[in-house]
Image 1 (tube, rainbow, N blue to C red):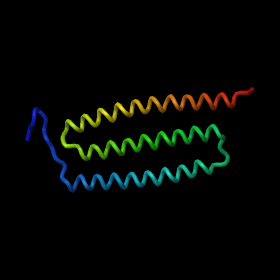
Image 2 (cartoon, one colour):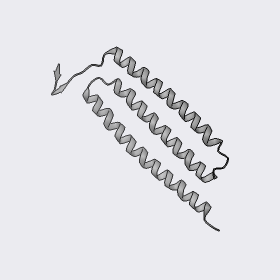
Image 3 (tube, rainbow, N blue to C red):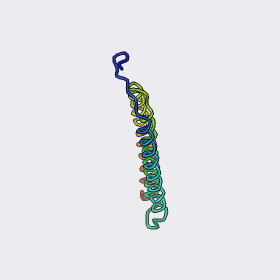
Length: 121
């Protein structure tokens, strides 16, 4: 079936259910990985406080970015047509660019703070 110059498509219900289940399993695996990583970071006695803060900040950013990617993937598997896929992709790219900009500014602030604290007085 062709509608207004675009091809309409449907994802079979079984395939959509499988994709959603796979995404949920991947999310659970990632959550387990993050939990283990957070424990490792929090128990590392020999890390400098500033480096630990930067590492924890980077970990939070990575968690946020991957969670956003999972959410995007879940929306994609539910898309009704190619126009919705394109709109979802455009929104995702726009939000990620903004998030990366914010994260870069925050990392720069943290690095400057760390450099200021380690400068000789």
